[in-house]
Amino acid sequence: MPHIIAQRTTARIEGDFVVFVIGMRVNKPWKIHKWWPVLTAMPKMLMELEQAPEEYGFLGHHSLGLLNVLQYWRSFDHLERYAHNRDCRHWPAWVEFNRKMKDTREDVGIWHETYRVRAGEYEAVYSGTPVIGLAKAGQRLAIDAAMDGARQRIEAD
Image (tube, rainbow, N blue to C red):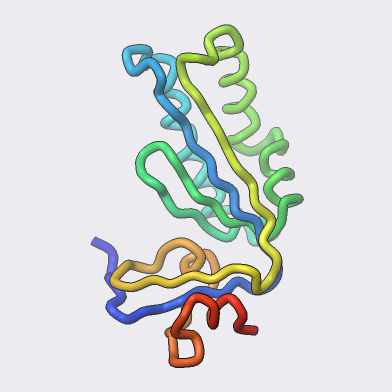
């Protein structure tokens, strides 16, 4: 079990960054042969990214249950470069998914959202959790009186 941090903390990431949320939806659970390859591809990609050199720009990730993942990237260019890199796990998995699903898209749904976040235009609070989310991808900081409220944290420099 991960170490739980009892005090309230916040997070900071140096500079701009990208939040990438990706997930899948199993629309026809009985078609295991359609959704199983999608489900098992993501952990392999995340392992590859965790071991990737810093120049890949991957800052970290947080699972949002079995089917959804929140990722943090240094920039959109880094994310896009990884997605299109034919030597990395994403590209062949994406090509294979499109090949298999082209006529049966209603069996398994996939989705993603990408957000560019400018430096200092976010806030976070964690209380009674392990190090997760932005605090894991960036730096975890103790909350003091000057950062007690959400407005104070988002306006902090």
